[in-house]
Amino acid sequence: MEIPPGQQLTFNFLEGGGDDPVYTPDRMVWAVWVAGEQNGKLDNQLTCPPAPARRIDYDIRVGPVWPEPDATARLRTDQAADRPPYATTQGGKIPKKSTLPNDN
Image (cartoon, rainbow, N blue to C red; front, side):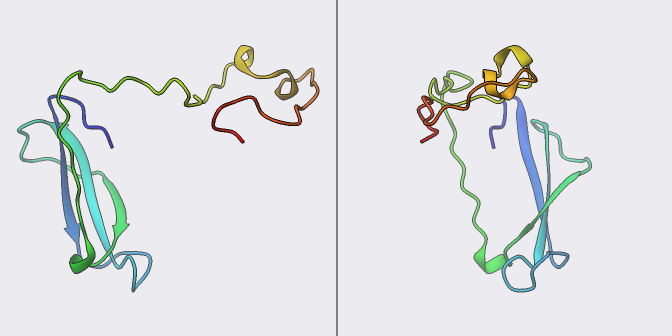
């Protein structure tokens, strides 16, 4: 997860409420707040491992503020003009092999 400058990730672990009694018995509630905020609602949640098996890793990145986008990564689009011919209502021939770098 990327946290923008001037924001903070705030989280808390709650015992119980997970979806698997062995692997994910607990819940983590979290929210992204303005940096320095100490009170507020943690309105997101996910199940998590028990306390002895948890680990939070983080990296602090020096500028630029956002990393350069990966030019080879495919971006999802819902624009009809960006769809290949075979994915339009007019239809078209489906290629036998993709020419996209991460699609083979």
